[in-house]
Amino acid sequence: MKRLLFSVLAAAALLQACTLRIQEPEIVTEIIDPLAGKMVIHASLEQGTRTGMSDLSVIWLAGDQIRVYNAANPSGVVFTLDPASAGSASGSFVGDEISGTGPYYAVYPASAGGVLSGSSLGISLPETQAWANASFGNGANPAVAYAADLEDLPFKNVCGVLNLRLTGSATLSGVRLYTAGAERLCGSGYIDMDYGVDGPVLNLTGDENILTDSRVLTLDCGTGVALSGSALDFRIVVPAGTLASGFHVEIIDDAGESMIKRAPAAANNRVNRAKMRSMPAFAYAAQYSPFLQSSQAGIFTGTLTGGVPTAVRALGDGGQFAWRTVSDVERRFRLQDWAQGYAIELTLSDPGSVGSLAMGEAYAFDIKALGATNGVSSATGKAVTLIKKWGDTGWFLDGDNRAYTIKLKEE
Image 1 (cartoon, rainbow, N blue to C red):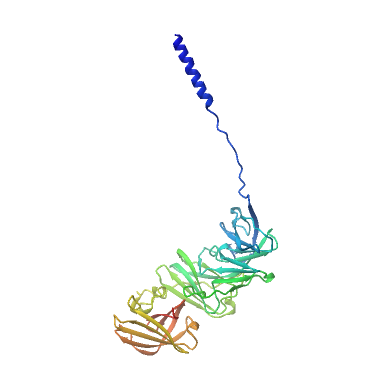
Image 2 (cartoon, helix red, strand yellow):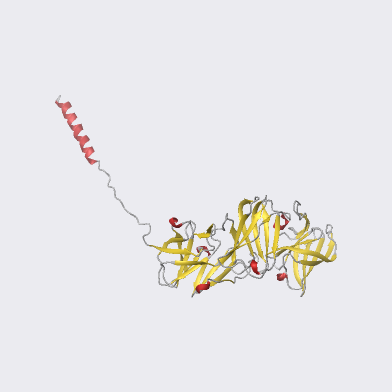
C-alpha cells in the first residue's frame, strides 16, 4: 500500500514539474509605418487631356507613376500614385526621399522620362498606344510639371488627342495614323521645362530608325473592338500642333482586311495642346485584302476586299532585291530569282525624292520584264497609286488592282 501511494505521489510530482515548464509565448506587437523613409508629393492635373478621361475630365488612374527630377537627381526618382487618389484630378504620390533642393521637375508617365540637363528634360513618345473605351491608353499622353518646392506639382499636358468616330459591323484589331506632313508623331526628344504660362513645347528630334517610322502611330485594339450602329471613339494621342498638313488613317479588322481614309491639309485638322480634335463619324467598310499587312516585296493579285493575296512574283529565299538611284528623278527597284528564271525592274518617276513620296498620290512605273515573269509584261508609264507608305516599304496599286510592294530605301 505504501509503495503504491509513493508511486502515485511521484507521478503527480513529475506531472507538476512538466506542467510548470510550459510557458505562455511572449507576444510582441510592432507597428510598422509604411511611409517610413518615404516622401509624399501632391500632384494636380491640367484639365483637358492626360492619364485617363471621365467624360471630358482628366483623372489619375491606379498604378500611375511620375518621375521627379532636380539638379541632384538628373535621372529622376519614381513616385507611385497612392491608391486612394485613383479617379481624382489631384493625387498623392509616394516615393523615396529626394536629395538636394529645387527647382523640381516631373514627367508623366515615369517611363517617358529621360535625363535632365539644366532645364531641358529628355522625353520619349511610344509608337504604339492601347485603345481604351471613351478614353485613351493609360500612359499614352505625357504631362510635365515644375515647381520651386514639392508641396504641389501642377502638371500640364504635352500633347492633344485626335478622336476618330467609327460605326459598322466589323471587329477592329487596330488603327494606324500617318501624318501627311514632315512632323514626327513618336520617338525621342526634349522639353524646355522653363515653359511659363504658354505651356510645354515638345521637340521630337530623335533619328528616324528604319524599323520605326516616327511619322506613324499605331492604336492597338488588343483582342478586338466590335463596332455597331452607334459611333465608337478611337482616341489617339498626338504631339501638339500636328496634322494640319493632313493625315491618313488605316483601319484594320480582325480578318486583316483594311480601309484607308485620307484627310486633306486644313487648319481645322490641327490638334492643339490639351485639346481633343473630334472628326465626323464614318462607317468602316473594308477596301483591301490582307496584302497591306505584309511587307514582303513582290507583285500581287487579290488585293481588294474578299480577295486572297496571291504572289505573281515575290521575294523568296532564293530571290534578290536591289535598289538604286538612276537620276535625280528616277529610282529603280529590281526583283529577281535566277533559279526561277526571271528579273523584273520597276523604274519609278519621282520629281522629288523617295522620301517625298506621298500616300494617296499617283505615280508611274516603267516596267522591264525578263524571263519567266508569270504574266508581268514590260510597260512604259504604268499608272500606279501609292496606297500606303510605312518605314522602308511602299504599297502601290495599278488600275488592274495589281499590287507592287517595294522597298523605298537601301537597307
